[in-house]
Length: 491
Ligand code: N01
Image (cartoon, rainbow, N blue to C red; front, side, top):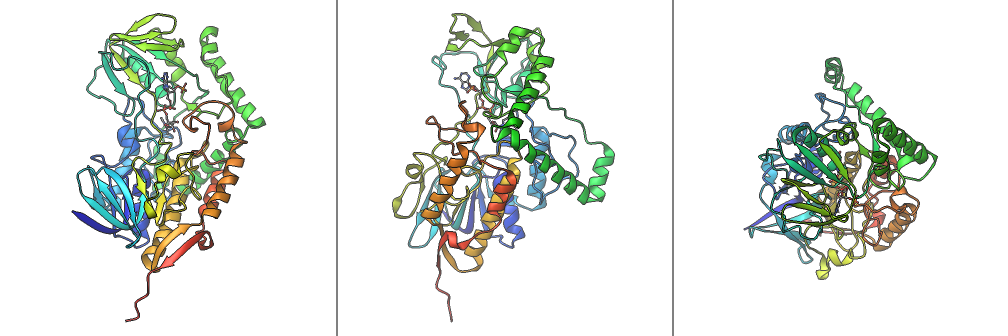
């Protein structure tokens, strides 16, 4: 069966739902959201591990067009963020636009009709005049390529696919991975399990995250005068912009921030051996900074042990490290991150003339302003190439993308625009500048991270302030695009 619509949105996480809300607010209601899961929420639906939380303040980690006076804490846990997402869906009556359990397996452009069509796993298809990719960069959980991983006979859990039925009480547990997810999980497990062995490959820089509750008077103020919330959001925004000076570029501010993290490590960890193991050998900001006040205390509990020997193999009973010690455990928790699609898309995208986006992006994903791609008319990306922030809320960037996309969709919807396709020379010039600027950032300063491909190409991060990013997306300049029109009927 084929369903026709004006706009196809793929993904019902923050980006897909935000796009839907802004389309509705612009008066465009003819859209369908395809979602492979059984509910909304994307990463916040999937990441329900104990301790899952956001390390960006709630007032900033939310859409400015859906303010929430009821945030309970400075930084929200995953459940509260998911509540907010459900609130968005209910407030804007989005559920009737969503097709759940609809896994897109390919997206194809048809030149004769200027329509995109999506094939799905269940054999149905959807066609639309414009398609919006909102599949998120971190949606496919990644298991490490460790020899013997299939031979382990105990229980295994990935951070992004938590098993809430597994009881850790009295268990010996191994956690592999000490990134943003690992450092949130480890304190929770240390409080429940008998023994937690933490397998660290690379230590990250850690900064404390005090998390005060919002007092009742503040919530009341937000309710009575939304301007108070908007003002605080702005203050937080500019505070985070200032952090860019230390995180995005290697500068004196980076040295100061690193000094702060080193001081925190010195104050929080008493044992000098442990401190040495936890001291990173790369500049702060190169990998994501870990924001937690609970991780270092957890590592110093009697039932917690940090293991820094490289993992040699997994065996039926546990983990064997390079120095030949066998660590038998009841459960292994993989906090090993995600398969970040280096080819940019979770399924094949075929443009005019049968060109493949996977091939076009084989040497590294590139787009114009992270949203449009030359050769692929009427296709728009959220969280596209080089749209990642290192210092500010990803949703600030996402709002800018959404509003840009909605402007483009309005042209297609209201102005008889048949195709809107960014010019290749404009896209190339844009990316030349982005890569030149990236070369001077901390992300490209020598560490390995999911921001970079194996060849060291950075198709992930935006090398600048959030303000710069938002400003470049504030206008849709048609000189940057090749535009064709539908014939206007005179009858
Ligand atoms: O994943 P990661 P994550 N043997 O890829 C280790 C977002 N997020 O899920 O550093 C041993 O960062 C790997 O080691 P190394 C946020 O954008 C946000 O933690 O590669 N270890 C690393 O320690 C974040 O950046 C929040 O040497 C292996 C870990 O596994 C992104 O999600 C909260 C290994 C993977 O770290 C991903 O974070 C949580 C191996 N073979 C997450 N393979 C917020 O607060 C991998 N590792 C918003």
